[in-house]
Image (cartoon, rainbow, N blue to C red; front, side):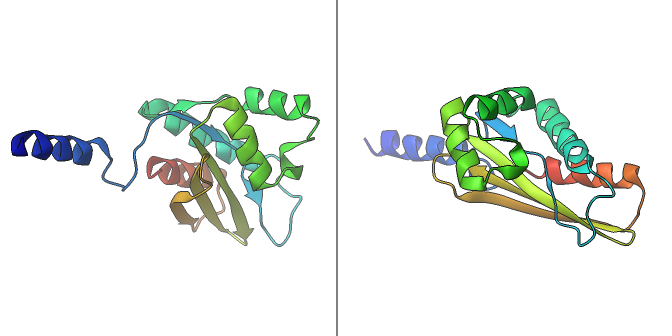
Amino acid sequence: MFILISSAWLMIGCASSPGGFERGGSIAVWDLDDLSPQKGGRPFLGEVLSSQVIEVLKGRGDYVVVERQRLLLALEELRLGTTHLVDESTRLKLGKMLGTRWMVFGGYQIIGDQMRLDLRLVEVETGKVKKAIQKISLSGQLERWLETARRAAEEL
């Protein structure tokens, strides 16, 4: 009996990832919000950075990524408008409807040649942030910003 209970605890301990939570399931990545003081110069950067995050998550294979088009269609169907107008709690409700387990939210801020990128991995069911990542790029080059997004996504 003792061996059976010990084996069960051992299997439970091995089931979770080293990051303190279990990876897997489906995940949706929202376009990153522009939190820069001077907005408007890079209207599609949030979508481009999010695409980098999506590619990393797809490549790793430990999440099933919900396609962006599916998210947008669900928003249209619910008549909620664009993703920029929908708050995080509404996005989580949408995630429940789509059957996603995780969502990635975040933003970026550009000041001068520096970019700060913040990502949050949120559990859809509870709304709890399971992991938060912050990266800073000291270069004003787009390729460096994309690399920063890839490095941040690798840590999710």
